[in-house]
Image (cartoon, rainbow, N blue to C red; front, side, top):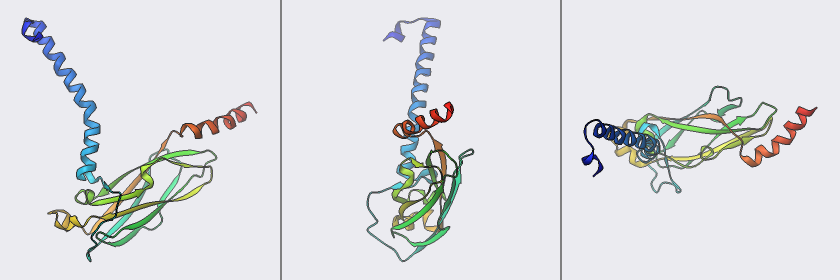
Length: 196
């Protein structure tokens, strides 16, 4: 081994280089690993995702409140259509959020999301959601965006989850660069305006 052949300061330097390379590698791996961990376990209020509805619907209900906010500088207006619903645990629910672009330019946005309390995160399961893809709104456009979800019946067996009677589903919209094909459509109009 190379480290075995090095002496004194060179050996110490080689060990430090190995430590630094290892730490940098782990720091790059930490973000995707943490994201995967949160989505898998619901840690930090991260909801689960499923392609199918629950097989079991309980008589027990939970109130789901809907929250909406915007990143600073995002010019849209954004709100839930209904502020809260009472749902049976396991029941598939369809809810809507409304976004409006009051500006005279096309704006793209992506929604980040969270569920509170953390104990409900892994049991709040989304089937379809506007937050899975980028949304693009034309000038003056208003859209209603759906989210389909259910609360997993396994929550009532969880030592902490069984005490959850209210869940808050929260979204924050962030402005994002327009998709390439949309940006290409916008460029000629902007160039013409600059010439005039």
